[in-house]
Image 1 (tube, one colour):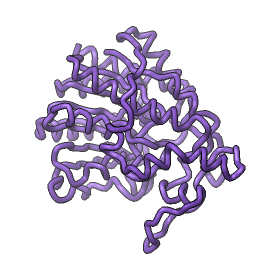
Image 2 (cartoon, rainbow, N blue to C red; image 1 turned 120 degrees about the horizontal axis):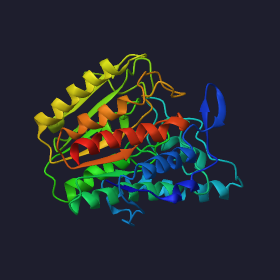
Image 3 (cartoon, one colour; image 1 turned 120 degrees about the vertical axis):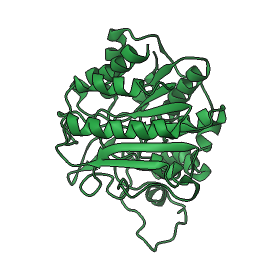
Image 4 (cartoon, helix red, strand yellow; image 1 turned 60 degrees about the vertical axis):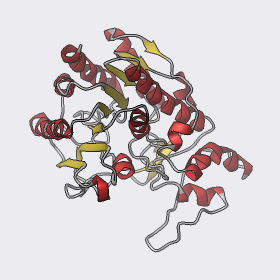
Length: 344
């Protein structure tokens, strides 16, 4: 299994977030990607390659043009206001307010975000674009005949909606990849999101479609971020009715319960008969994760990878969350090893 990795992710460094009522260094930090790269390299799964430049067209197949324009220009607008500190949104629309893009950067930051977890610094846009290219290069590899690939994306993407950033996510890499697979001829694509937090952006992007089916296994939104999506009764709308499945679980969930949900999700995917699979790979389900409350052990990720492999689909793993930095490399590598041992 080849890994796609870009050192340009380091441009997104020194960013902050609002957490526990304080402005703190973001939990989503460059060392995460470096630990994963080192662990994958040590297991010798295959070549580690740089991403190819795909331009913005594949991104615009998923995201609104005004939103992408904002991401590309936000830092320059911030500097034009005489600021050089990290740019962090601080207010948002309430229900009943107009969705009309403001002219000032402070207004734009609120208009194009839904929380204070998405900060912008000088190198953010370059890292964001590179992360999308990492995922798209993984799509290329599947198209060239590879059985699987690992897109070591940073920043992550699954919380990003078509026109809003949030939860450390700017471009929804998994969604961009799924759409690219469709555009390259796959009749139906499945997305399996196994991050601790619900992939609200991914669900939203494909919610009314029947060609990209989405399964999320996550902490229950009644008590966990992102709170406002991820319930069991969200099954799709219009043409997409029945093509979205959520498996929300309570705090403290261990592997026995979690793996039962994975089996259910995999059976749903098998019934849909997709031609390719995108896995939003979050390992913040780990028991030592600092901002999550599941109880999985490192060894459990071997079994997770093996179960996904038994779907016997061309599979692209796209990196999402996981914030226990010392364990993140082992947990990701275990997932990929479990997959490779079954799928080859």
